[in-house]
Every structure is written in structure tokens, then in C-alpha cells.
Image (tube, rainbow, N blue to C red; front, side):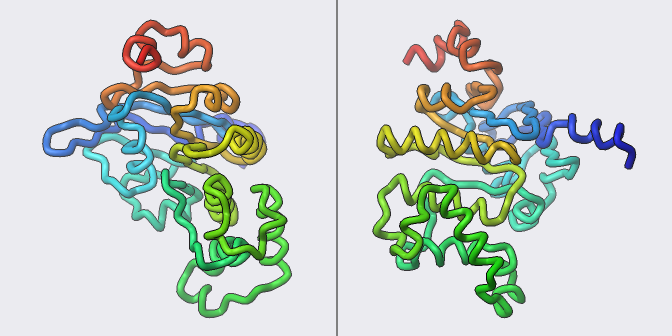
Amino acid sequence: MSAKAIGFEMNKPVLAVEGLTVSFDGFKAVDDLNLYLDRNEVRVVIGPNGAGKTTLLDLICGKTRATAGSIRFKGQELTRKAEYQIVRAGVGRKFQTPSIYEALTVFENLEMSYPAGRKVLGALLFKRSAEVIARVEQVAAEIFLAERLHSEAGLLSHGQKQWLEIGMLLMQDPELLMLDEPVAGMSVSERGQTAELLKRISRNRSVLVIEHDMDFVKSIAHKVTVLHQGRVLAEGSMDAVQSNPKVIEVYLGH
């Protein structure tokens, strides 16, 4: 591939969602939605409850099947792929409630997420090599848990558990990281550290975040998308979105 062609590929959106629709018993939770996410972009999706935010993530990761439309990640169509195939393609997703192994240590949680150990054969042959240990220690430092590597995960604070789950995703080195309300229940200082973490990890991957905390959104977002009734109501910088009369009426005004 020529340098010009490589440049063209790099300029394409890493994620292209077009005409995306999903109906549940006639109700359109997501309705003809278009969204384009660039490489190394932090995009935050906001909107009132029931706007379709979490459903959008469910559709991208394959948890829910689209009724119509297209989801392309790095040119690959995702709507026909299984959840595990989407993970292997480079998409990682964190749900609202931390999903960690509380009886295991921080080290063991991260180690279990190492890609070679996630397949059946890989799990059978998996060894704690120097490479694995180095990767675990690197990720633990990134998520502010280097000093807690050998602590049981169940003893961590709520915010630290959120970081651990982000770390478990980082172990897989996804090119698209999707986070559903990552700072819910966190202290003010933990929210600040999480903003720092997301800015850092977006240097070599795209991040798609659902969030309600407007101060946090302002601190991390390159661009904000506002959903309402399954459609894009507005999109742009945080300042532009906050001053949009439609957004104020249906969301920020409440």
C-alpha cells in the first residue's frame, strides 16, 4: 500500500455508524442514527434517560442486533459478527457496574485478561512469562493500582474497581474502548484521575464514553453527541452543545 493510500486509510473514521435502527416491539430505541468516530478521539454521548445511549453501545459490541443500518469498525461490518469476534477485532466495552473477580488479586484480574489466556487452548498452555508480568505491571501503573497489585480486588474502593475493569480491557489493547458511565459513584479526586487516564489512553486508541457528569464531560471530550429518542439531536464541541437551545430544552434544562 502506498504512503498516500495509508494516509487516506488513517483519515477515515475508525468507527462509522450509519442508518442504525433497532426496534423492540415496535418501539425504536435507536432510530436511523449516524455517528462517526475518528482515530484517537474521545467522543462523549450524552442525553436524557431512555435516549438510546446504552443501546448504542449494545449494538456496537454485538449484545443487541440491529434491525437496520450499518456499523463499520476499521472497514469491517460488525452487525453480522458475534460478540467475541467484535472483541477480537479490537473493540472493548466496560459496562456501568464493574465486572471484576473480587476474590482474586489485582494482578490476577489483569493477568486473566491477557489475550493469550482468553482462548481455550491459550488458557490451557498459559504461563506467567516475563512478558505477561511486564504487561500487567505496565497496565497497573497506568490505572493507578501499581501499589495494590497483590491486594484482593474486593478490597478496592468503588473507583479503584472501575479503574481495574478499564485495566482489564487495556490488557487486550483494544483500538476502540467504550465506557458506560465510568465515573458514576466516584469521589471528586477519582473523577479527576479518571479524566487524566482517559486523556492518556486516547493517545493511541479511540474512546467512546456515555456520561451524565457535565464537568467530567467538559474535561475529556473532543466532541459531544447528544441523543434524544434514539436520534442525534446535536453534535459538536461541549460549548456548542451546551448553548444549543434544543439541548437545553430536552436535557440540560432539566
